[in-house]
Length: 176
Image (cartoon, rainbow, N blue to C red; front, side, top):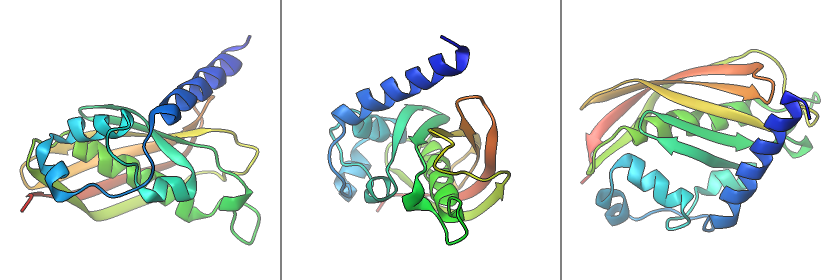
């Protein structure tokens, strides 16, 4: 088996294992948000103890990995994600990247803190199609402090080819 085939098999097996544990879509309560650090909250989603974000179900992507300062989302773009000119809509790229960016900032937050996106900058480098196969949005923190979080993310395929790059600035605040 080639490296590409091995990577594809690994990605698909990891996604299947994660999806088998996930809860249905929903929105966490403020009490649930306040109960955990950011990385603990995201891990509880992966463990199926908290609901997945409804947008993840709508666009058929999922959180795959989380650790402080790093998250990975995976999805397989299809024709349902197309724009009228025959390629994946920019909104798919942006939503996948915004999810990775926001969650990676969240992964670095202590218990009792929240965040919201202030700015999102996306560079679409090449087209996605239904032939691309699975892609991953890999988010990494640049700096997360008490008031501001900054992060970056790339969308890559199984060959490591980059399809998009993004950065974000998030406002960090105490939860009420």
